Image 1 (cartoon, helix red, strand yellow):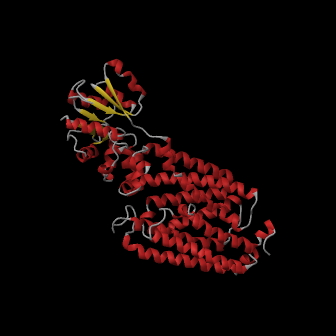
Image 2 (cartoon, rainbow, N blue to C red):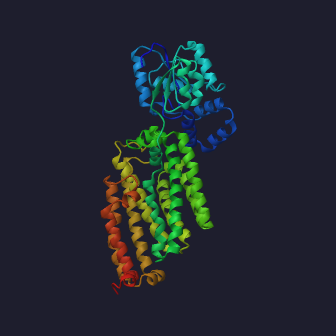
Image 3 (cartoon, rainbow, N blue to C red):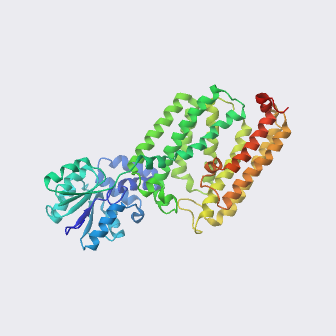
Length: 479
Protein backbone atom coordinates (compact mmCIF):
# COMPACT_ATOMS: atom_id res chain seq x y z
CA UNK A 1 0.00 0.00 0.00
CA UNK A 2 2.20 2.80 -1.30
CA UNK A 3 1.36 6.34 -0.15
CA UNK A 4 3.26 9.41 1.07
CA UNK A 5 0.73 10.42 3.73
CA UNK A 6 1.18 9.57 7.43
CA UNK A 7 -0.31 6.23 8.45
CA UNK A 8 -2.54 6.55 11.52
CA UNK A 9 -3.59 3.39 13.33
CA UNK A 10 -6.43 2.78 15.70
CA UNK A 11 -5.16 0.53 18.52
CA UNK A 12 -7.94 -1.65 19.94
CA UNK A 13 -8.94 -4.30 17.41
CA UNK A 14 -6.82 -2.74 14.67
CA UNK A 15 -3.11 -2.58 15.49
CA UNK A 16 -3.69 -4.86 18.46
CA UNK A 17 -6.04 -7.83 18.36
CA UNK A 18 -7.02 -7.00 21.93
CA UNK A 19 -8.47 -4.00 23.77
CA UNK A 20 -6.45 -1.93 26.26
CA UNK A 21 -9.50 -0.99 28.35
CA UNK A 22 -10.49 -4.61 28.92
CA UNK A 23 -6.84 -5.60 29.41
CA UNK A 24 -6.62 -3.04 32.20
CA UNK A 25 -9.91 -4.14 33.74
CA UNK A 26 -8.91 -7.81 33.98
CA UNK A 27 -5.38 -7.02 35.12
CA UNK A 28 -6.95 -4.85 37.82
CA UNK A 29 -9.28 -7.67 38.87
CA UNK A 30 -6.26 -9.91 39.28
CA UNK A 31 -4.38 -7.32 41.34
CA UNK A 32 -7.18 -5.64 43.32
CA UNK A 33 -10.64 -7.14 42.63
CA UNK A 34 -12.65 -4.97 45.02
CA UNK A 35 -10.89 -1.75 44.04
CA UNK A 36 -11.30 -2.48 40.34
CA UNK A 37 -15.01 -3.27 40.63
CA UNK A 38 -15.54 -0.13 42.70
CA UNK A 39 -13.68 1.93 40.11
CA UNK A 40 -15.68 0.42 37.25
CA UNK A 41 -18.96 1.13 39.06
CA UNK A 42 -18.16 4.74 39.95
CA UNK A 43 -16.52 5.75 36.66
CA UNK A 44 -18.50 3.69 34.16
CA UNK A 45 -20.26 6.76 32.75
CA UNK A 46 -16.99 8.65 32.26
CA UNK A 47 -14.92 6.46 29.95
CA UNK A 48 -11.93 8.81 29.74
CA UNK A 49 -11.61 8.91 33.52
CA UNK A 50 -12.16 5.16 33.82
CA UNK A 51 -9.39 4.44 31.33
CA UNK A 52 -6.97 6.80 33.06
CA UNK A 53 -7.62 5.36 36.52
CA UNK A 54 -7.38 1.77 35.31
CA UNK A 55 -4.08 2.58 33.59
CA UNK A 56 -2.80 4.03 36.87
CA UNK A 57 -4.10 1.11 38.93
CA UNK A 58 -1.98 -1.65 37.40
CA UNK A 59 0.94 -1.56 34.91
CA UNK A 60 0.41 -3.45 31.65
CA UNK A 61 3.05 -5.19 29.51
CA UNK A 62 2.01 -3.63 26.20
CA UNK A 63 5.07 -5.18 24.57
CA UNK A 64 3.49 -8.63 25.07
CA UNK A 65 0.12 -7.77 23.56
CA UNK A 66 -0.84 -9.47 20.27
CA UNK A 67 -0.50 -7.44 17.07
CA UNK A 68 -2.58 -7.99 13.93
CA UNK A 69 -0.08 -9.58 11.52
CA UNK A 70 -1.65 -8.00 8.42
CA UNK A 71 -1.55 -4.53 9.96
CA UNK A 72 2.04 -5.13 11.09
CA UNK A 73 3.04 -5.75 7.46
CA UNK A 74 1.47 -2.44 6.41
CA UNK A 75 3.34 -0.70 9.25
CA UNK A 76 6.67 -2.18 8.19
CA UNK A 77 6.07 -1.12 4.60
CA UNK A 78 5.19 2.44 5.69
CA UNK A 79 8.28 2.72 7.89
CA UNK A 80 10.50 1.51 5.04
CA UNK A 81 9.00 4.26 2.88
CA UNK A 82 9.97 6.81 5.52
CA UNK A 83 6.37 7.67 6.42
CA UNK A 84 5.27 8.64 9.90
CA UNK A 85 3.24 5.94 11.62
CA UNK A 86 1.10 7.22 14.50
CA UNK A 87 -1.26 5.59 16.95
CA UNK A 88 -4.67 7.20 17.53
CA UNK A 89 -6.80 5.52 20.15
CA UNK A 90 -9.60 6.04 22.63
CA UNK A 91 -7.38 4.22 25.14
CA UNK A 92 -5.46 6.19 27.75
CA UNK A 93 -2.49 8.23 26.54
CA UNK A 94 -0.02 6.59 28.94
CA UNK A 95 -0.65 3.14 27.46
CA UNK A 96 -0.76 4.33 23.85
CA UNK A 97 2.54 6.18 24.27
CA UNK A 98 4.08 3.07 25.83
CA UNK A 99 2.78 0.89 22.99
CA UNK A 100 4.19 3.24 20.34
CA UNK A 101 7.61 3.12 21.99
CA UNK A 102 7.46 -0.70 22.16
CA UNK A 103 7.09 -0.92 18.37
CA UNK A 104 9.28 1.99 17.29
CA UNK A 105 6.39 4.14 16.06
CA UNK A 106 6.06 7.92 16.10
CA UNK A 107 6.26 9.66 19.46
CA UNK A 108 3.26 11.71 18.34
CA UNK A 109 0.20 9.85 19.62
CA UNK A 110 -3.47 10.75 19.82
CA UNK A 111 -5.30 9.29 22.80
CA UNK A 112 -7.73 9.87 25.66
CA UNK A 113 -6.32 12.00 28.47
CA UNK A 114 -8.63 11.43 31.42
CA UNK A 115 -10.96 14.24 30.32
CA UNK A 116 -11.66 13.67 26.62
CA UNK A 117 -12.53 10.19 25.32
CA UNK A 118 -10.82 10.31 21.92
CA UNK A 119 -13.29 8.30 19.89
CA UNK A 120 -15.33 8.90 16.76
CA UNK A 121 -15.79 12.62 16.03
CA UNK A 122 -13.31 13.65 18.75
CA UNK A 123 -10.59 11.53 17.15
CA UNK A 124 -11.47 12.81 13.68
CA UNK A 125 -11.17 16.41 14.85
CA UNK A 126 -7.78 15.80 16.44
CA UNK A 127 -6.39 14.15 13.29
CA UNK A 128 -7.75 16.81 10.95
CA UNK A 129 -6.18 19.52 13.10
CA UNK A 130 -2.85 17.68 12.99
CA UNK A 131 -2.76 16.60 9.33
CA UNK A 132 -5.53 18.49 7.56
CA UNK A 133 -8.49 17.05 5.62
CA UNK A 134 -7.47 14.04 3.51
CA UNK A 135 -3.98 14.45 4.93
CA UNK A 136 -3.59 10.97 6.38
CA UNK A 137 -4.35 7.26 5.92
CA UNK A 138 -6.39 5.80 8.75
CA UNK A 139 -6.75 2.17 9.81
CA UNK A 140 -9.74 1.15 11.93
CA UNK A 141 -12.01 -1.80 12.60
CA UNK A 142 -15.49 -0.69 13.64
CA UNK A 143 -18.42 1.51 12.68
CA UNK A 144 -17.35 4.38 14.96
CA UNK A 145 -14.25 4.75 12.77
CA UNK A 146 -16.48 6.04 9.95
CA UNK A 147 -16.23 9.51 11.52
CA UNK A 148 -12.46 9.35 10.92
CA UNK A 149 -12.47 7.55 7.56
CA UNK A 150 -14.63 10.33 6.12
CA UNK A 151 -11.70 12.75 6.61
CA UNK A 152 -8.93 10.35 5.49
CA UNK A 153 -7.38 10.00 2.06
CA UNK A 154 -7.46 6.21 2.33
CA UNK A 155 -9.40 3.98 4.71
CA UNK A 156 -7.71 0.79 5.86
CA UNK A 157 -10.58 -1.42 7.03
CA UNK A 158 -9.60 -4.26 9.35
CA UNK A 159 -12.15 -7.06 9.39
CA UNK A 160 -15.73 -6.64 8.17
CA UNK A 161 -17.31 -3.19 8.64
CA UNK A 162 -20.41 -2.93 6.46
CA UNK A 163 -20.62 0.85 6.87
CA UNK A 164 -17.27 1.21 5.07
CA UNK A 165 -18.91 0.08 1.81
CA UNK A 166 -20.16 3.66 1.35
CA UNK A 167 -16.64 5.18 1.37
CA UNK A 168 -15.65 4.68 -2.31
CA UNK A 169 -18.71 6.66 -3.42
CA UNK A 170 -17.35 9.58 -1.38
CA UNK A 171 -14.02 9.46 -3.16
CA UNK A 172 -12.16 7.70 -0.35
CA UNK A 173 -9.93 4.77 -1.24
CA UNK A 174 -10.44 1.57 0.73
CA UNK A 175 -7.91 -1.14 1.60
CA UNK A 176 -9.31 -4.25 3.30
CA UNK A 177 -7.25 -6.31 5.76
CA UNK A 178 -8.24 -9.48 7.62
CA UNK A 179 -9.42 -9.22 11.21
CA UNK A 180 -12.05 -10.46 13.62
CA UNK A 181 -12.48 -13.83 15.32
CA UNK A 182 -14.00 -17.22 14.54
CA UNK A 183 -16.41 -19.46 16.49
CA UNK A 184 -13.76 -22.20 16.36
CA UNK A 185 -11.38 -20.00 18.36
CA UNK A 186 -14.08 -19.31 20.95
CA UNK A 187 -14.81 -23.04 21.18
CA UNK A 188 -11.12 -23.60 21.91
CA UNK A 189 -11.33 -21.03 24.73
CA UNK A 190 -14.29 -22.89 26.22
CA UNK A 191 -12.10 -26.04 26.33
CA UNK A 192 -14.71 -28.75 25.71
CA UNK A 193 -11.96 -31.38 25.99
CA UNK A 194 -11.88 -30.56 29.73
CA UNK A 195 -15.51 -31.63 30.13
CA UNK A 196 -14.32 -35.21 30.34
CA UNK A 197 -13.35 -34.47 33.96
CA UNK A 198 -17.02 -34.35 34.83
CA UNK A 199 -17.25 -38.15 34.64
CA UNK A 200 -16.31 -37.77 38.33
CA UNK A 201 -20.00 -37.07 38.94
CA UNK A 202 -20.65 -40.75 38.13
CA UNK A 203 -18.51 -42.05 41.01
CA UNK A 204 -21.23 -41.97 43.75
CA UNK A 205 -23.63 -43.87 41.49
CA UNK A 206 -20.98 -46.51 40.75
CA UNK A 207 -19.92 -46.78 44.40
CA UNK A 208 -23.54 -47.22 45.53
CA UNK A 209 -24.25 -49.74 42.73
CA UNK A 210 -27.21 -47.63 41.57
CA UNK A 211 -27.21 -48.56 37.87
CA UNK A 212 -30.67 -47.33 36.87
CA UNK A 213 -31.97 -44.67 34.49
CA UNK A 214 -33.69 -42.68 37.25
CA UNK A 215 -30.29 -42.14 38.86
CA UNK A 216 -28.23 -41.79 35.69
CA UNK A 217 -30.36 -39.23 33.81
CA UNK A 218 -30.18 -36.36 36.34
CA UNK A 219 -26.46 -37.02 36.79
CA UNK A 220 -25.98 -36.62 33.03
CA UNK A 221 -27.76 -33.27 33.18
CA UNK A 222 -25.58 -32.42 36.16
CA UNK A 223 -22.51 -33.20 34.07
CA UNK A 224 -23.76 -30.77 31.40
CA UNK A 225 -24.28 -28.08 34.04
CA UNK A 226 -20.79 -28.63 35.45
CA UNK A 227 -19.33 -28.53 31.96
CA UNK A 228 -20.88 -25.11 31.32
CA UNK A 229 -19.88 -23.88 34.78
CA UNK A 230 -16.29 -25.07 34.34
CA UNK A 231 -16.04 -23.47 30.88
CA UNK A 232 -17.27 -20.14 32.25
CA UNK A 233 -14.50 -20.27 34.86
CA UNK A 234 -11.90 -21.29 32.27
CA UNK A 235 -12.72 -18.07 30.45
CA UNK A 236 -12.36 -15.99 33.62
CA UNK A 237 -9.12 -17.76 34.49
CA UNK A 238 -7.67 -17.05 31.03
CA UNK A 239 -8.71 -13.39 31.19
CA UNK A 240 -7.08 -13.00 34.58
CA UNK A 241 -3.93 -14.75 33.35
CA UNK A 242 -3.36 -12.83 30.11
CA UNK A 243 0.12 -11.60 30.96
CA UNK A 244 1.22 -14.85 32.62
CA UNK A 245 -0.03 -16.87 29.63
CA UNK A 246 1.83 -14.64 27.18
CA UNK A 247 5.03 -15.40 29.08
CA UNK A 248 4.36 -19.17 28.97
CA UNK A 249 5.88 -21.26 26.14
CA UNK A 250 2.58 -22.98 25.22
CA UNK A 251 -0.19 -21.03 26.98
CA UNK A 252 0.74 -17.98 24.89
CA UNK A 253 -1.30 -19.60 22.10
CA UNK A 254 -4.52 -19.57 24.09
CA UNK A 255 -7.31 -17.64 22.31
CA UNK A 256 -7.44 -14.61 24.60
CA UNK A 257 -3.70 -14.34 25.22
CA UNK A 258 -2.99 -14.58 21.49
CA UNK A 259 -5.78 -12.20 20.54
CA UNK A 260 -7.64 -14.82 18.48
CA UNK A 261 -10.80 -14.00 20.46
CA UNK A 262 -11.60 -10.49 21.77
CA UNK A 263 -11.88 -10.08 25.52
CA UNK A 264 -15.39 -8.63 25.16
CA UNK A 265 -16.57 -11.78 23.37
CA UNK A 266 -15.10 -13.85 26.19
CA UNK A 267 -16.99 -11.82 28.79
CA UNK A 268 -20.29 -12.37 26.97
CA UNK A 269 -19.55 -16.11 26.65
CA UNK A 270 -18.79 -16.27 30.38
CA UNK A 271 -22.17 -14.76 31.28
CA UNK A 272 -24.03 -17.07 28.88
CA UNK A 273 -22.32 -20.24 30.11
CA UNK A 274 -22.73 -19.32 33.78
CA UNK A 275 -26.44 -18.58 33.28
CA UNK A 276 -26.96 -21.91 31.49
CA UNK A 277 -25.15 -23.82 34.22
CA UNK A 278 -27.17 -22.23 37.00
CA UNK A 279 -30.42 -22.69 35.07
CA UNK A 280 -29.88 -26.44 34.62
CA UNK A 281 -28.77 -26.79 38.25
CA UNK A 282 -31.90 -25.03 39.51
CA UNK A 283 -34.05 -27.36 37.41
CA UNK A 284 -32.47 -30.44 39.05
CA UNK A 285 -32.73 -29.78 42.79
CA UNK A 286 -31.78 -27.25 45.45
CA UNK A 287 -28.87 -29.30 46.79
CA UNK A 288 -27.21 -29.56 43.38
CA UNK A 289 -27.81 -25.85 42.75
CA UNK A 290 -26.08 -24.98 46.04
CA UNK A 291 -23.12 -27.23 45.19
CA UNK A 292 -22.61 -25.74 41.74
CA UNK A 293 -22.76 -22.23 43.23
CA UNK A 294 -20.13 -23.31 45.76
CA UNK A 295 -18.02 -24.72 42.93
CA UNK A 296 -18.22 -21.52 40.91
CA UNK A 297 -17.42 -19.29 43.90
CA UNK A 298 -14.48 -21.48 44.90
CA UNK A 299 -13.24 -21.56 41.32
CA UNK A 300 -13.44 -17.78 41.07
CA UNK A 301 -11.54 -17.44 44.34
CA UNK A 302 -8.95 -19.84 42.96
CA UNK A 303 -8.61 -17.81 39.76
CA UNK A 304 -8.42 -14.48 41.59
CA UNK A 305 -6.14 -15.34 44.50
CA UNK A 306 -5.76 -18.91 45.71
CA UNK A 307 -3.80 -20.27 42.73
CA UNK A 308 -0.95 -17.90 43.57
CA UNK A 309 -0.64 -19.25 47.13
CA UNK A 310 1.75 -22.14 47.74
CA UNK A 311 0.04 -25.37 48.82
CA UNK A 312 -3.31 -23.59 49.13
CA UNK A 313 -3.66 -23.87 45.34
CA UNK A 314 -3.14 -27.64 45.36
CA UNK A 315 -5.56 -28.10 48.25
CA UNK A 316 -8.15 -26.01 46.40
CA UNK A 317 -7.69 -28.08 43.23
CA UNK A 318 -8.32 -31.24 45.26
CA UNK A 319 -11.42 -29.64 46.78
CA UNK A 320 -12.77 -28.66 43.35
CA UNK A 321 -12.41 -32.25 42.12
CA UNK A 322 -14.06 -33.54 45.31
CA UNK A 323 -16.97 -31.11 44.86
CA UNK A 324 -17.70 -32.80 41.53
CA UNK A 325 -18.15 -36.13 43.32
CA UNK A 326 -20.46 -34.57 45.90
CA UNK A 327 -22.39 -32.93 43.06
CA UNK A 328 -22.90 -36.31 41.40
CA UNK A 329 -24.41 -37.61 44.62
CA UNK A 330 -26.71 -34.58 44.88
CA UNK A 331 -27.85 -34.77 41.26
CA UNK A 332 -28.66 -38.50 41.43
CA UNK A 333 -29.90 -38.32 45.05
CA UNK A 334 -27.35 -40.95 46.04
CA UNK A 335 -25.96 -41.32 49.55
CA UNK A 336 -22.20 -40.74 49.48
CA UNK A 337 -20.00 -42.47 52.04
CA UNK A 338 -17.78 -40.32 54.22
CA UNK A 339 -15.11 -42.95 53.56
CA UNK A 340 -15.40 -42.22 49.87
CA UNK A 341 -14.85 -38.49 50.34
CA UNK A 342 -11.91 -39.05 52.67
CA UNK A 343 -10.49 -41.57 50.17
CA UNK A 344 -10.73 -39.44 47.04
CA UNK A 345 -9.44 -36.18 48.55
CA UNK A 346 -5.82 -37.39 49.02
CA UNK A 347 -5.95 -38.85 45.50
CA UNK A 348 -6.90 -35.48 44.11
CA UNK A 349 -4.30 -33.84 46.33
CA UNK A 350 -1.66 -36.08 44.77
CA UNK A 351 -2.94 -35.25 41.28
CA UNK A 352 -2.75 -31.54 42.11
CA UNK A 353 0.92 -32.07 42.98
CA UNK A 354 1.34 -33.99 39.71
CA UNK A 355 -0.06 -30.98 37.81
CA UNK A 356 2.56 -28.68 39.35
CA UNK A 357 5.33 -31.28 38.96
CA UNK A 358 4.58 -31.52 35.25
CA UNK A 359 4.70 -27.74 34.83
CA UNK A 360 7.96 -27.44 36.75
CA UNK A 361 9.62 -30.34 34.93
CA UNK A 362 8.78 -28.73 31.60
CA UNK A 363 9.89 -25.27 32.77
CA UNK A 364 13.03 -23.88 31.16
CA UNK A 365 14.54 -22.24 34.26
CA UNK A 366 14.37 -22.14 38.06
CA UNK A 367 12.27 -18.98 38.22
CA UNK A 368 8.78 -19.29 39.76
CA UNK A 369 6.11 -20.23 37.26
CA UNK A 370 4.26 -17.15 35.94
CA UNK A 371 1.30 -16.49 38.23
CA UNK A 372 2.22 -19.39 40.55
CA UNK A 373 4.21 -19.76 43.76
CA UNK A 374 6.47 -22.64 42.72
CA UNK A 375 9.84 -22.99 41.04
CA UNK A 376 11.86 -26.03 39.98
CA UNK A 377 13.53 -26.31 43.45
CA UNK A 378 10.08 -27.16 44.87
CA UNK A 379 9.80 -30.41 42.91
CA UNK A 380 11.08 -32.48 45.82
CA UNK A 381 8.50 -31.09 48.25
CA UNK A 382 5.72 -31.63 45.73
CA UNK A 383 6.86 -35.23 45.22
CA UNK A 384 6.77 -35.82 48.98
CA UNK A 385 3.24 -34.44 49.32
CA UNK A 386 2.10 -36.51 46.33
CA UNK A 387 3.56 -39.61 47.99
CA UNK A 388 1.76 -38.85 51.25
CA UNK A 389 -1.49 -38.53 49.29
CA UNK A 390 -0.96 -41.92 47.64
CA UNK A 391 -0.24 -43.69 50.92
CA UNK A 392 -3.13 -41.90 52.65
CA UNK A 393 -5.60 -42.95 49.95
CA UNK A 394 -4.55 -46.60 50.12
CA UNK A 395 -4.74 -46.67 53.92
CA UNK A 396 -8.23 -45.15 53.89
CA UNK A 397 -9.34 -47.64 51.22
CA UNK A 398 -8.12 -50.50 53.43
CA UNK A 399 -9.99 -49.11 56.44
CA UNK A 400 -13.13 -48.84 54.31
CA UNK A 401 -12.78 -52.46 53.22
CA UNK A 402 -13.07 -53.64 56.84
CA UNK A 403 -15.81 -51.18 57.82
CA UNK A 404 -19.44 -52.28 58.22
CA UNK A 405 -20.47 -50.36 55.13
CA UNK A 406 -17.61 -51.79 53.10
CA UNK A 407 -18.39 -55.36 54.13
CA UNK A 408 -22.06 -54.86 53.30
CA UNK A 409 -21.38 -53.58 49.75
CA UNK A 410 -18.33 -55.77 49.10
CA UNK A 411 -18.75 -59.14 50.83
CA UNK A 412 -15.55 -60.62 49.35
CA UNK A 413 -13.19 -58.29 51.23
CA UNK A 414 -10.05 -60.04 50.03
CA UNK A 415 -10.84 -58.96 46.47
CA UNK A 416 -10.89 -55.33 47.62
CA UNK A 417 -7.44 -55.86 49.06
CA UNK A 418 -6.35 -57.33 45.74
CA UNK A 419 -7.79 -54.26 43.96
CA UNK A 420 -5.39 -52.11 45.97
CA UNK A 421 -2.48 -53.44 43.86
CA UNK A 422 -3.54 -51.96 40.48
CA UNK A 423 -4.91 -48.92 42.32
CA UNK A 424 -1.53 -48.25 43.91
CA UNK A 425 0.23 -48.98 40.62
CA UNK A 426 -1.93 -46.36 38.85
CA UNK A 427 -1.29 -43.71 41.50
CA UNK A 428 2.47 -44.25 41.61
CA UNK A 429 2.63 -44.27 37.81
CA UNK A 430 0.78 -40.92 37.63
CA UNK A 431 3.20 -39.35 40.08
CA UNK A 432 6.19 -40.74 38.19
CA UNK A 433 4.88 -39.45 34.85
CA UNK A 434 4.45 -36.00 36.39
CA UNK A 435 7.96 -36.10 37.85
CA UNK A 436 9.46 -36.88 34.44
CA UNK A 437 7.19 -34.43 32.61
CA UNK A 438 5.57 -37.11 30.48
CA UNK A 439 1.94 -36.13 30.76
CA UNK A 440 -0.50 -33.32 30.07
CA UNK A 441 -0.69 -30.19 32.19
CA UNK A 442 -4.03 -31.47 33.54
CA UNK A 443 -3.62 -34.95 35.10
CA UNK A 444 -7.35 -35.76 35.07
CA UNK A 445 -7.63 -35.09 31.34
CA UNK A 446 -4.44 -37.05 30.78
CA UNK A 447 -5.72 -39.97 32.86
CA UNK A 448 -8.92 -40.21 30.85
CA UNK A 449 -6.94 -40.35 27.59
CA UNK A 450 -4.15 -42.63 28.79
CA UNK A 451 -5.04 -46.06 27.42
CA UNK A 452 -2.54 -47.96 29.56
CA UNK A 453 -3.66 -46.13 32.69
CA UNK A 454 -7.31 -46.74 31.83
CA UNK A 455 -6.51 -50.42 31.57
CA UNK A 456 -5.12 -50.37 35.11
CA UNK A 457 -8.23 -48.55 36.34
CA UNK A 458 -10.47 -51.10 34.63
CA UNK A 459 -8.57 -53.86 36.46
CA UNK A 460 -9.27 -52.08 39.74
CA UNK A 461 -12.94 -51.55 38.93
CA UNK A 462 -13.39 -55.15 37.76
CA UNK A 463 -12.00 -56.50 41.02
CA UNK A 464 -14.30 -54.18 43.00
CA UNK A 465 -17.32 -55.34 40.99
CA UNK A 466 -16.25 -58.92 41.63
CA UNK A 467 -15.95 -58.21 45.35
CA UNK A 468 -19.46 -56.74 45.28
CA UNK A 469 -20.87 -59.81 43.51
CA UNK A 470 -21.99 -57.69 40.55
CA UNK A 471 -20.43 -59.91 37.89
CA UNK A 472 -22.36 -62.88 39.30
CA UNK A 473 -25.56 -60.83 39.41
CA UNK A 474 -25.21 -59.50 35.86
CA UNK A 475 -23.61 -62.37 34.00
CA UNK A 476 -23.73 -65.40 36.29
CA UNK A 477 -19.93 -65.15 36.78
CA UNK A 478 -17.85 -65.69 39.89
CA UNK A 479 -19.22 -66.64 43.26
